[in-house]
Length: 349
Image (cartoon, rainbow, N blue to C red; front, side, top):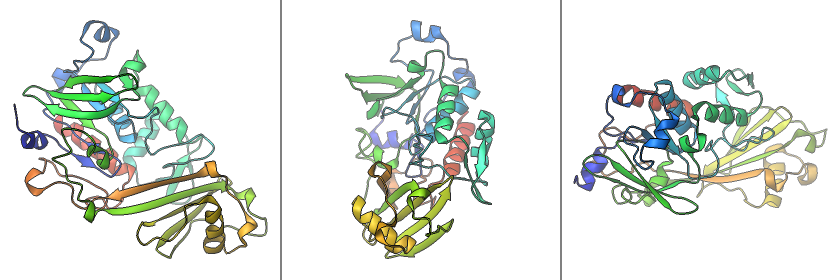
């Protein structure tokens, strides 16, 4: 049985703080090719996925990888830890809580959008959004990759808790709502946030978080209707400034005001409480009296991100380099993720 260090060397990791890609010992495309059929699920051992690529993570990168594999007629199985697909794309077709605005230079993403025949709308000379919201994008993309038995092709509420290797294949164990389930496969693609890898048994001792060097960043997005501002106060589109260690951007799209605040957690000075955010926005962003507008708590989305400058010991580096927010890729952008997927699949297949 290979030692743990050799196991890590067999992995190829690509991460942007929101995604980590891994493929190992991929066999030839001919050996993997062939459409998924109902017979596959009725005849074969459901835990033996030797002829599949296992994708762990149902965010945009995992979904895009599944989409590309299906186009190449390579069988796959996608596992997502939560009860929904989309990852950092989170939308209810009215409010966009996650990533929703994209760049004209995102060629791979635009090609995907064109394939899906989705309508877009410009927000300025450089950016665009989905005309009917990003929820339509995730729904259509997941529909395209689903097979005849979608509950077999895509597994929700499956959280990866262990990943090991024997001479022939990988063993992956997922925690589910009922019990743990184990699968084996020769080909694994991890589409996970880098920090999530630290919680997977079999990987945690090989990947060092180096918390002392991590950059903890906080980001808050507040979304509310422009009608909630008093009419005499105007909003400047694409407003940007840095104040008290806080980067602030303000955009008005379809009558909705999107205010994004971000900064180093140790240096940024802005409140978390809803009531105090009202006051902070009024005084620091809009220069208006504190009671001039209000936001609803359910429309305040708060999360934190971390960028780890160095994750792997030099002696434990995989045979491909790690792309991580704050390292190779300074900004976690969707185009970088899709490009990494295309390059990796083309290289191995």
